[in-house]
Length: 145
Image (tube, rainbow, N blue to C red; front, side, top):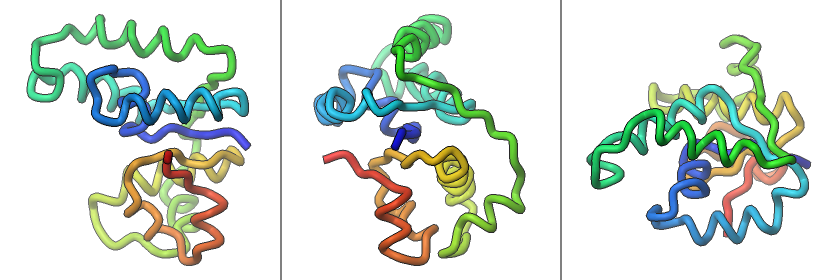
């Protein structure tokens, strides 16, 4: 089983000052050999969020942040997952239903993971609401310990 990193997990992995960096490094050492992935959404979020001075504490160029991301993606077990589906597939995957606008990106990432036989790695336990049963949450979501 491979893993798709949500933006929060990817940021924690690639940004040492992040509060969950140590947790993600431990998770990565234990699980990366099974394969891990990013998507256009998670890559864009990584660059967008870390380049904000309010997040990083200083002005950092987009190019510099992109280089950090590229170094992480050079890992031999990394793969890029393409968002090659639409809302119909997202609605069909989210058996718990979509209840609000803040769930849209999460639903797309969850669907992407499911379509690629991967688990979505996230610190956002609320994503589990998108799935109707505990069995589905166990099968498709992973919250790093």
